[in-house]
Length: 179
Image (tube, rainbow, N blue to C red; front, side, top):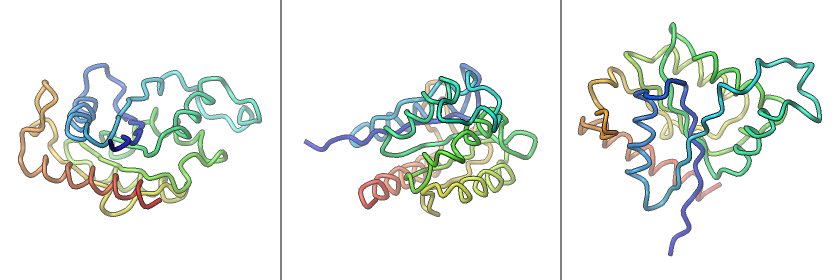
């Protein structure tokens, strides 16, 4: 039996019912043979980044987030573009990892699923590069007009999008195996 790899999913959309969370659920269903995908739902609990608090004993929410990242075999970020950039809650959480390096060389996939998403995606890619996240060209994807491509029942209804997502999941699996 193949041991499933543990993927920590981060949604840049903090709404309880969001298209990005639906996409994560769809991906969980598509990859259930080789991944266990768990959504980290504590992003809104992480305090605003403050270097004065980034000590040997940071706030407990930060410690929990960092520990979840460490325990994962890979990271899946699924985010909308917000005001042509990265949603603040997601960026704040990532900022807490700059000094502690949990993303450093960690196999990571980034999907920007929004109305358009290209500028937000580019912005987040710059952040992920600077913190040395293990993102490759094959583990990143922009899905424009996402609301027309996934159902509320968490099914990717667009065949091309489903194929691109499967390809990304396979690339993430390969990246984890070869890391």
